[in-house]
Length: 421
Image (cartoon, rainbow, N blue to C red; front, side, top):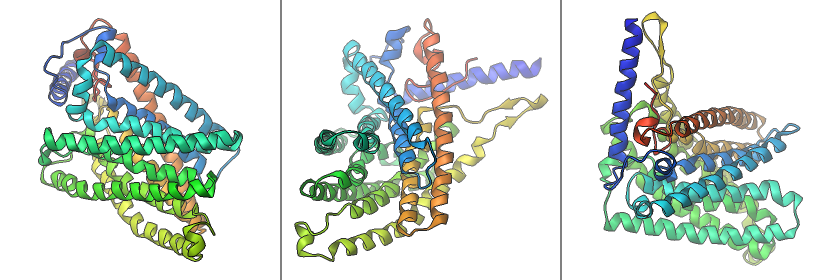
């Protein structure tokens, strides 16, 4: 009996602590404690788009798996269609948020950490483009190739404008001390960096006249994103070492850094394999294609171990909090609560998995290709787990119609999960 009472008391204490954390992270000065559907819509933030960016990335990953089996492409199509449905629903909810609560539009761009998660919206659209190429182009006419080319240049333009404007805003209105650097800032960088991975995915199906500009754009955008990641990474690592990795539920965010070099490998190898031979620049330098492909292969090998080191470090930091506590009477208490940031386990590691598979293909190594396939299986399992927890949390929020949103079940709105007391 005492154990049950203590359990309820601990649950209420966790609720109070999480609510205070949420208020400090998303402290909107004019925020009222709305209850009902309007309150839930108001608290819906761009962080939720980490779900859609990860879902589409998983679909693309399944299509690239080195060792395919019958039906795997169908599974990828199903995941892609699911992503489109979720993405459209999220867009509708976000539009309703800005219409019903106009003040949240400006605050979403100027309040951290949400301003960093705007990049998740663009990443969601970018991964959709990759899936359109993988699942649509083989079964559609030339019109889709043209449409993807147009959408690619729109994406490249918009994300560059967004990324430049966001950092200009940070310069003029500082909202983050460097000692408070959060892994979420990598998402804003990845929105531009993903242009390189998209280019690597779509370039091979484009005509030579369009292919070369896409490859050049992909490499230049990847260079921008990679260098920006290198600039930000010392601050992140230094702050983590000097302070601590954060609360257990937020530690999966450390995986975000993995994607910087993972997607760089994907871009280098993918774009080098799509270079048009005997055309324009490469007509004047006939050996250039082979030289660049060799350089891309070995540059990718150079980056791979750094990617693995980032992954292994994040994994070891998270392992102590994965296993639940076992209290008196063998009462099991989880150390980690679900948070939207758990999607960080998926999206960056998709880049790492794709990079491993690409290297295995280039070096014709069965061992490396099997490693990439095993990584795909594990990552697909983590995606299923996150999707189940996310759906459960959303259902709990919508079921608690009469309670203020910050007290009911602040799992998705905005970033945390607490246990009902």
